[in-house]
Amino acid sequence: MSDLLPEDELDAVEALIDAWAARELADNPVIDVVERAPATEGRRWFLRVRGEEKDVYTVWLTLRQRTLHYETYVMPAPEENHARFYEHLLRRNQGLTGMAFVIGLEDAVFLQGSLPAHAVTDDELDRILGSFYAYVEQCFRPALRIAFASRFGA
Image 1: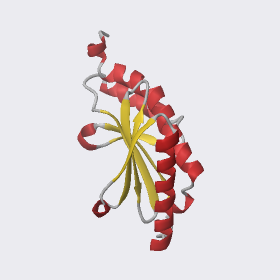
Image 2 (image 1 turned 135 degrees about the vertical axis):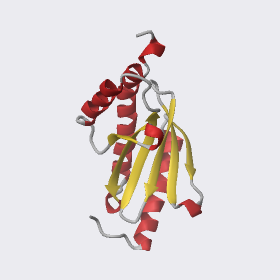
Image 3 (image 1 turned 30 degrees about the horizontal axis):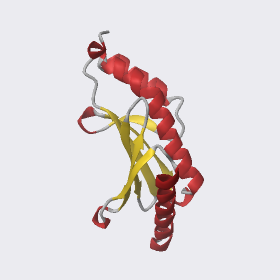
Image 4 (image 1 turned 90 degrees about the horizontal axis):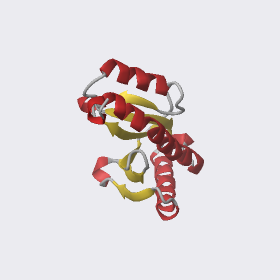
């Protein structure tokens, strides 16, 4: 387990994420909105991403005392083909780097990961955002077709 970062180091990582997010909003056409949670909710950012397979999704970045946690909601729980659906996601997890598909609240599917807070850099933030984009684009439509097959006429 990584050590707790002192408050001044957390402040520096927070400033780094703020600056990175502002640049992404200005320069990256897939970033539609960047927002900060109220200070009472901790150090948390929301990046609205415009995709192709999944039109829009939000990436949440949460800076904790030891880690930067990141996640996005992918889709609701499957209506059908449960075993095939979860097998599909588990097999997809094998090829992912730095994040994994998980079951969250109400059995919804999320893509999430974490990184030691002291390892947060612009390059790591770029890798995280790029990975979210690639993995959601690759996995969303096939998972949707399995989980909601009857809606697609299958």
